[in-house]
Image 1 (cartoon, rainbow, N blue to C red):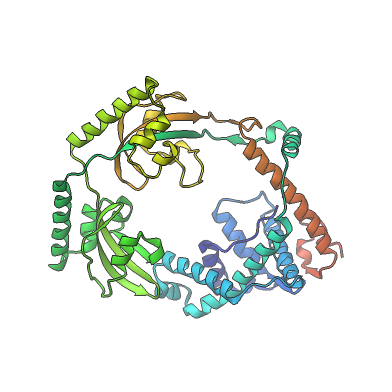
Image 2: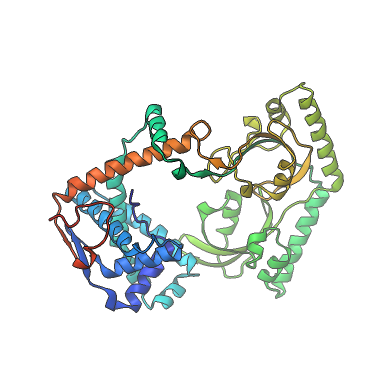
Length: 448
């Protein structure tokens, strides 16, 4: 099925470049109902596909043009069916996208300078684009919202698939864990606070906050950028951090030492624009003493022995002993934050866990080892390998959900194809003759 076009940061940049740098490519090449498609629309979208390495053979121009025809058809029919999009919807989505664009371009002034246009003009250019995209999404949702597939349909679909068209399924890993966070002594916290106070004093005496962040911050990602967190909204931050950051008002102003679930921070305020602020921070994560780590490992190895002796199940032990609040109530099952499922690709797990898993079979329990949570918090853990699939060609027994999704997608393709054929008959078209030789997926664009 042709995908509904969504404005990305790259598309924003490319379309503005196309308009501001090459007005000669403009010109109407298609009319669909009351919607027009410009030559620059095709050129812009082609640039976007090429930037992602998608060429669609030698037929990219035709492929892109048909995507634009489909979106125009959706928007036109949405208007015919009186589907409404409120001004608040449009402005909310437009503001969100422009905020992302500002951040990508390092601020509004830089964006205006780059495109030689005031911000209001840039925003005006995309208002109708955003409205059309919301309309097309709502229209397509209305067409496909009731699609379901039964188990019988999934099995029938799988039997019809040629073997050489079945997808390769990557290895997937499911694990459970029991975590003990080593006790952090008060002396360690005092040491961290002392360091952060010293950094505050050094900045007040004239040293660069960013330089100190690059040297001492435990937030590796932001430290590589002098502690810069970019432009953020209150909702982007954990509550304690947000409360401290949004109290700051003056350029260069420093916060007090703030404690969050990640560790201890100091924040430097850079500038504010409406509901967003530009800030830097230095994070120090408390590190447990070696003696406390050894205690945690000894405790976990004892728990593992109890489980292996079948005196307690892994799930029961996780509920009773694990200090990780995100997994202990579920018996230790680890959920992938990227997918919301219990399946992980090896690249999504930390190096220490991957190393341990190489030595394990399904059902086995590891020895204790040191790791870091996905929030960067040091922890000692044991894991149970619940399941690990090998890379394989998709099979309905092991990959039912994948096959079901493919079956549902095919059903969507058929419904969309039938809808296009139906609506083409009642919609006015005028399409440039240069595209007559295109091998379109959906026939009927030139049937009138």
